[in-house]
Length: 231
Image 1 (cartoon, one colour):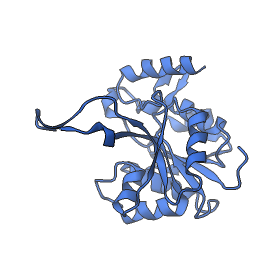
Image 2 (cartoon, helix red, strand yellow):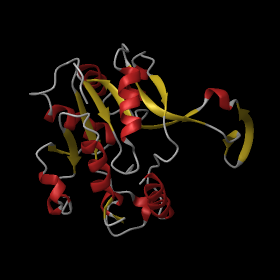
Image 3 (tube, helix red, strand yellow):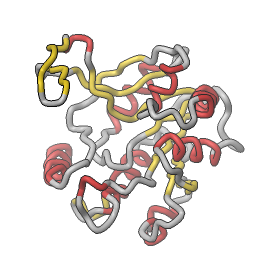
Image 4 (cartoon, one colour):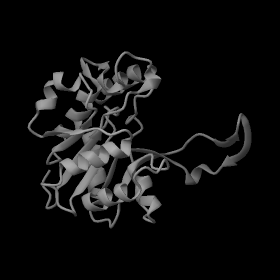
């Protein structure tokens, strides 16, 4: 990808994925001949968009060193943190000697192995001149309900509701500062929420619906189906 600015990727991969009810973290489950995280990282590397990919890994992780991709020259391993935001911040710090303040960073979930190069390049091209950055997202086609306990209290106008995906793309310095200033805040569930809390308004770039996050056991079969359709 020929561009006058630099992009870096960050992949927080220190989670344990309890909802998968598996014997290992979900990023290491088998999918179409590889582990989930190998597919995810291969998609990022093969896009040609990134200088390097910083992967935040738990210090007790026995699986990561066994993967050949962990030794790829464009992969940087950083220590994972307790929460997602901690891992992202750690990965950002691992890039500090090479990334400039105004370089772009795209943070992507380890458990989203179906990301396409088209979506990566669309996001970069759409947001490269933006003052803040933004995220891939999907509009909601379902009717949404506000619930108290198991009782419906209201119907939410879905025109104003989007499902957040990844990558989430922000300037290196802005994202690092936002995560440091909001450290420990439980309201920070993704990178955009850290920027939002400081008063910024990230943009939305509509992504593909096959960019699913593997969360439950049945998602593995769906991800394999999408990969076969993309091939």
